[in-house]
Image (cartoon, helix red, strand yellow):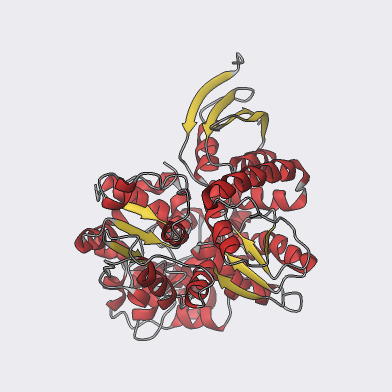
Length: 442
Length: 78
């Protein structure tokens, strides 16, 4: 057995807990999961059936754990793991499953296929066959945590520039973007880049919130690698900052995987060191509007608007009504996609897929059901509260010529606040009439 | 322009993590010792590019904020 295979199998063993073992043992082969999967809907072939994907790991598991399978592998369709099989498993888990869990919620037995895909991802990461770029992105984030001095001054310069921009947009010279403010109530954790800092900063200032930024971002590529060690190192930066600053709450930017990670995983990883409430920015927006902390004009956006439910936020996070409440207060023509909410179709960009250029064709093909859904609504604006979803829908927009404008929820809220000046990228009224449709930032 | 510069790329409008994804791809197209230049508009690159370079065997030679964009040059070290 080679070292690579040994590492992969050792990782599989370390992943085995009751939920995974149950998923590996229980499947009725009914095939209901097929129609639940956006890959299968886009291209109905056996490789795209979640149960088929699960079976690939089950056959390896059987060989390792079932005496009969080890002696007569052909009888039980068991398979000894080798380099070729590991490469195939790895490619499948990283390019043919976005971990959206739609198959799981539609399975009569609740078989958690994404849990099995995560196990394969973990095996591949340990064995060194995971996509290089995801490893690099995770390691870059860890590096930033080890020595923030190499970028902190540049980051603070950017924040000061954004502050000037924000004061101009709001027409208020007293607004601020606090960084590392001791004792603030909220630590807002953005993604890298101004587009997830400036609009929320405007909202926090308008609501007169006691908030602060840290210098670290929310994205966690260790999660996509199913590498708990890396994911914990990335998350630790935020946990340490929250503890150091003494905040009461962490608010995560419009980002599906980051919200899921901080809401569900991080409190377990850092049990005893983590005493914060975790909310998504979309929950905060709903609260501010409901409580009158920010004023929005419900007639601002008259073009048709639809909302894409990020799998991590809606199906797996339960954030279903909050974005709809916000949109009901700032739009006059909201149109649901079908299916939606917990049954929403994945856009095809989750699981780190948008960062994997080698699988772009597959990603675009798998996104066709979502593109069709968007087209059917006739909406001119697609709102998505997840960065990966927005990137994917931006690519679908171009590929399938949807002619829509893609926006974060916060950006539309800021627009509905009727401030003296618009956000960058929102200058032209025609963007909201569907005449032209770039992704914000283009 | 340095004589080791082999590629010039436009990342304007690309949001995180795409500038890092694209530069990582581009570095594979050049030899050790050669460089790639890129221009981006996402300010996140100011932190992300140096962090990525540190962990991926590359060196940031230039990282400059200009009036409307950010220009950086990266050399492949290994």
